[in-house]
Image 1 (cartoon, rainbow, N blue to C red):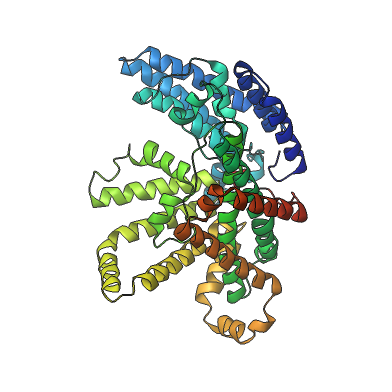
Image 2: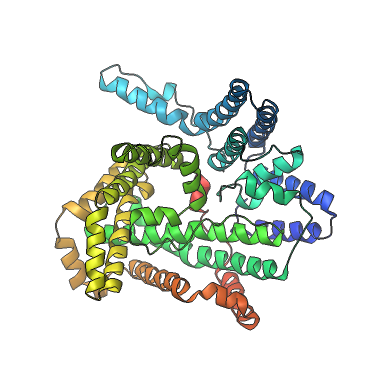
Length: 483
């Protein structure tokens, strides 16, 4: 069931109209049943996977806590949790990728193996990368002593399947979300105002901006890039699209959570205009970045093992992040490039600080800041070529046309800018609009000002509602649904 669909609007209306009148003891069962319905709407048989993950981690969590002090037995139950979740994820998401790469290697040596004999062409269960990580984190946290096991299976099942954030995050943690299902229902006026605002804002961002950008650039990614200027503009537009698309889903998820009386962790903190790649990752997909930090980077040694070891740890984490996003060479390259830029930033930290200090001394701090932001944006956009392009050959053609074919295409594009494709013109316009909205929030706290003024809130919400109705709740699925 897609957020941006009429059936989901009806689903939410039904959910809330019944939920508010139920006693607290029944609210959990109502939400759990609807969460399973929401997930099973795509493929009912895939419910067995989320039920398996739920049951295994509930049992493992209990057993890990039961054997407190006996590390050997605790590890056995922890390994069962990891094996189950990673096994499910690995089989459905990575089987064909690794088999295909292995067969390719064999054929490179002349074996002549037909890959179709071994590929399964499995349908990737929606949200599997999110809920498996969320349930694994629960058992790991119990093993570490950071949280106690859930006393009630049904509340734990709701923690795993909670529909607002089930299929595309934010990735929740048991210490934050699980206790909320046990406390008495509370819904403040502030939560209602903010929830409604975020839901409408999310839909506006999705149907007005992200979906328009998707339609503008879709034709440019269907075949090899032919023109450097067009490819560069499509690349920049996609980087804007993915931010607006992904953050709009998080806005809607958090807003629905608030209307249900629950606080879902924020997933973005103004990541669109940032002066460096590390800063971007501190603000982008925060819940997943924290997951990789807490469960992979720090256990690997974090930054405690010296410069070289820290850089290796960063590359490992970003490689795994790329693989988490998708089972393809494109995503592996995307992860490695992100890692390389983060390592490069650490190596160049001292000269960059000197440049920043010199800019401040000369009174050029603001221009220097935005030059760094533009450089970061273009770097991210370049890396995102491997995220967006459907295959390796198209990705290579984008890199070649944008960076290796000379400046001729750009000179011609500038000279004939009046004849530029109207859709790309609109795409570049939306980038400017998103930039201005982003910086308005940074400098003026626009969202907080609107929420603090009831008349402003009313006018803005009516305008957003009218806009969504005008554009219609339909269009492409959210980008991160595919993970």
